[in-house]
Image 1: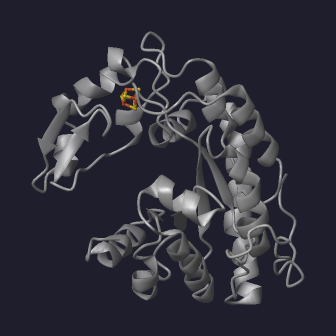
Image 2: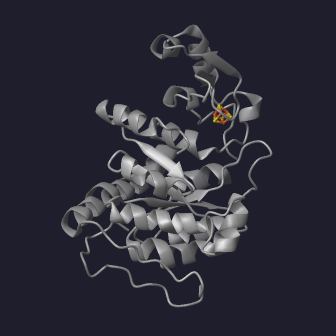
Length: 297
Ligand code: SF4
């Protein structure tokens, strides 16, 4: 959102047939929403709690109000943002509230995103936390890739039998025009791009990293969602691919069929948001009367 050229970058990506996605804490979205309208296929607003003070403490910046404003702005512009809830052992008890009070009344998809684990980063999610995530994910307008949890229960990536395909599936570019390999988190190599990304991608240096993706000792136990989601998607030989598939189909149906039809037939919408001053009040009813379409459960 800080990048002035973002609308141009998104337009270029869309012209080339890419799906575009932007994740934001909402601080700058209301200001830039008009110039970004129609350019983002998967717009994600991060939310960590239904309680403003808890959310702000988790983010380290006061932005809960901005997330609410972002939802209002996006719906008024005909966008269908998703809410991205990164689940930890500490905030899992707020998950259902965010769904019932904010996501579902607005028929927005709540992405249930387990906190990633890498080296010392990320607390191990308890079994209780994972079960709570799985229970909520049975409701409509939610998305959880269950393979993320299976990977965690099996101890994350094993360098001897790696699941990771970070180099094969992701192109990681730093703000300094460098290709970062094998992934942003490990960052063993930073190759200057200087307009030759196509050749670089086919170079021996990248091929070397591709051969070792997921095989470094530092890869042991890794479960960084943004690399494993595409890794699962290209590995039909393993169980993660098949476990991911139904959740992907369900998300795509809701996102690209149900929400698009609702938007087409219902037009722009006024957000239904909880009264943050009285968080214990009843959950808003939402605009379900406007148009209800079947969602996959
Ligand atoms: S296993 Fe993790 S640390 Fe290793 S290359 Fe893959 S994403 Fe990077």
